[in-house]
Amino acid sequence: MDKPMLDDVGLWVQAFLSPTVLVELAVLAVCVGLAWGLVALLQRGLRRGDPRSILFGVRIVDGALFPLVLLSLAYIARTLLHHWVALAAFKIAIPVLVALVVIRIGVKVLQVAYPDAAWVRPIERSISWMAWLGMVLWVTGLLPLVLDELDQIHWKVGGATLSVRTIIEGAVTAAAVLLIALWISAAIESRLLRSATGAELSLRKAVSNAVRALLVFVGLLVALSSVGIDLTALSVLGGAVGVGIGFGLQKLAANYVSGFVILAERSMRIGDNVKLDNFEGRITQINARYTVIRSSSGRESIVPNEMLITQRVENLSLSDPKVWMSTVVSVAYESDVDQVAQLLTNAALVSPRVLRDPAPSAALSAFGADGLEFTVGFWIADPENGSLGLRSDINRAILSALRAHQIEIPYPQRVMHVQVDGAVPAAMSPGGTPAPVPASAG
Image 1 (cartoon, rainbow, N blue to C red):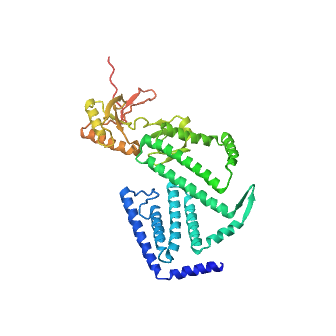
Image 2 (cartoon, one colour):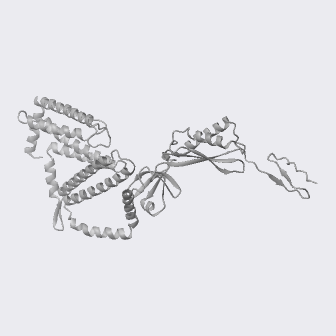
Image 3 (cartoon, one colour):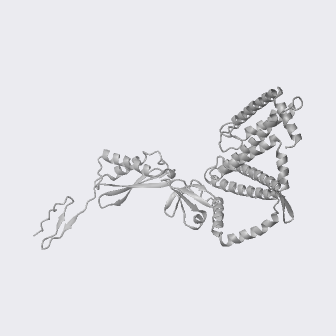
């Protein structure tokens, strides 16, 4: 460290020990209070408490708006105080707030854009370490010296001269451009998916995925250009990628194309109940490459989008979300058919999940070997909630109604004929005793 820098550090330390530092600290406290109040008013006025919001978090200090407002107020206060007092505290406060803004924006954008990605956490730590390291170098005045030293390490690549400083500045610029692109795409996605359900949700999901891919692609081009990479070289890479897709990646490309076709045609939407290869469940996600189907038992099936296009898929709620279900009951042949049908229809209405329009119905569906078979049919609008509990409630109500009206549910009956050598075959009753043989006439 040279002598002028030592003099600057000595003057800064002397200014920090002066009584005017108390004035600076008081002004900073006022800035913190004003920033807190402004963000609280905006959060209350806009009714924002969404953890996925970048500017607003669940609490006031969670989002990126609070450090941004505080940095703006601190910069204005520093400009005003510069004419009356020698600044010391603000020389630390401004870099700290800048680092805090960078960390908060970077972390929040990555959390919103990729909420479930495992690689987000290491990148968040890297952003924090780099921001605090830059702040320390800025405050101590070592940043220009470090940049000059890094600029001395250079080499020639083709017709361009690259240095470590150029690469670092390009990487920082590229990261900033990509973060801005992800921020814009997250805001557009939040706006599109807000209060969207059913068919609109699938279509808006397709639009948001396309917008995010386009913005990230444009941001990547700008980032590569800022680093110093010639974009004309990408034409060769594009040709190679095209050949790879044509030969080895055609299945992957088919899944991506199928995903956009599904989202555009809306033949399958988030929330639909489908059946594919004996697996039945509700669509919970439609991604660019695959679709997630969750069964009522909790199992999830990850289906490539190409299968949903090329194979037969039963969509139980494509045009109508209502699903018809049934249960079969046997009663004795001596029972009153009209009374049984009425009791079965009333028993189906015990569950609030059963729709009243169309109403349940009971029909004499078959003459069974042991009794009359009735089929009770009913409609529900929420098959994603499962059917086992519903069938159990209705079957228990049917059993109680039949017992209350003394209507018999017959046991299975079987007749056995035993062949004995040299004897006349005897019919066996269900209890196992020989049945009486009628006398022959004459």
